[in-house]
Each structure stands twice: as C-alpha cells, then as structure tokens.
Image (cartoon, rainbow, N blue to C red; front, side, top):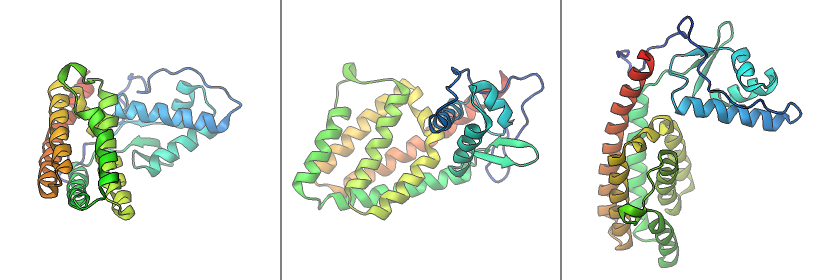
Amino acid sequence: MTRSDHGETPTRKTRPGREFGLTSTPRVEADKPKNLAESVYEQVKSDLFDFHLLPGDRFTEADVATKTGASRTPVREALYRLQQEGYLEVHFRNGWQVRPLDFVRLDESYDLRIVLEQVAAKRLESASPESLCELLDRLDGIWLKPPARRSYEAVEVADWDESFHCSLVAAAGNREIARVHAEASEKVRIIRRLDFTQRTRVEATYEEHAAILKALRARRGDEAARLLGAHITVSRIEVRNLTLHKLQSARSS
C-alpha cells in the first residue's frame, strides 16, 4: 500500500458492489432521540476502530440510517460528533468520508504523549505518600499479575492501558497537562488498540507497566520517565506496522 508524501493514507470511494462497511446492528427505537444518536455514534465509532470502515471510505447519511434503523436526525448528530473528534470529514455535495490516517500527525501525538508522561513521572516523585500509594495500589492490581491471570482480550487491555497512562498524568496534579494528554491519547486511539491484538505485545505491556510502577513506588522518577519513553516509542512502531498491515489486508479482501 502506498501513502502520500504528507504521510496520509490515500482516500478512496467504496468500490462498486462493495457493501457499505457498517456491521449489522439491531434497529433502534425511534422514540428516544438522545439514545438513538448515542447508539449510532457508538456503532459507527466501533466500526471505525475495527476497520470495518476504512480510511478514505465514503458514505451517506442514508447508508447509516439504513444500517442502524435510525432516522436522519440522530444519524446526522452522531456523524457530526465524530467529525468534531477528527474521525470523519463531511463533503456537503458528496456525503461523508472516513478521515485518511495521517501518520505524521499520529507520530506527533505519540511524541507529545512521551513528553507529557515523562514530566508527570518526575512530578510523581514528590507526590504525597498517601495519594501515590493509592494510585499505585490500584494499578498494581491490574498490571502486577502472573501470566496465568492476565487478560488477553484486546479491547479490555486497550482500555486498561489508556487508563494506566492517563491516570499517571492526572495524578501528577496539572490539569492542563492532563487535558492536553487526554486529547493526544484520543487522537491515537483508533490505531493504538491494534497493539493489543498480538499476544506478545500484551505480555510486553504487562511487563513494561510493572517496571514503571515499581520505579514510581521507589520514587525513581527519572527511571520511570525513561521507561515510559521507551515503552511508548516501541508501541508507536508496532502499531504503525500493524495498521499498515491491517489496511492492506482489508483493502485486498
């Protein structure tokens, strides 16, 4: 697969004869507009994350309405929400398009995460014993487990992983850093979860998180920062390769 000089995946229209990429979902009740919009939002976002809808795919509101059984108003509300979050683009004459992946911007978001998480790790070195112990005890309960007791469910581990990193940053006590970090984490979420579809990567995440937690408990902020930087860098390389492979496989199927 090729991509542009700007690091974006090429756009494309859905191939002739190819069914619109949303997976089937039960028809939703028509008397609850807020629940309808939320249901459509969750379904489309799930299909984006699972690559049932591919970067560059184009579709209409009518396509989504047909698949979900929802009316155009909640469909439009859900799609505009996904546009605001950066997943979709709207073309007023040609409907909607899944935003092409921009690997340059994704790399920049990973770089930002490294900087912010390393700052947080160093700040945690001087956190109060009570607050630090409470945080680490909670995270230890998830990540300091023997292999036989670990989860290898990709979605679950991806959620735990994002919570791990966001919890560390939030505990450092700077709300602006936490806000910017959360935005950067959201931008890479669509590809980041692929890291946990590979058993070896899940095992590595458990081991690397455990090492970070032990360094923080020992008040070794510089070591924790170094481990976080290495951990995120390896993950970025792995998810980029997995994303390109996933896209190539999906487009050739």
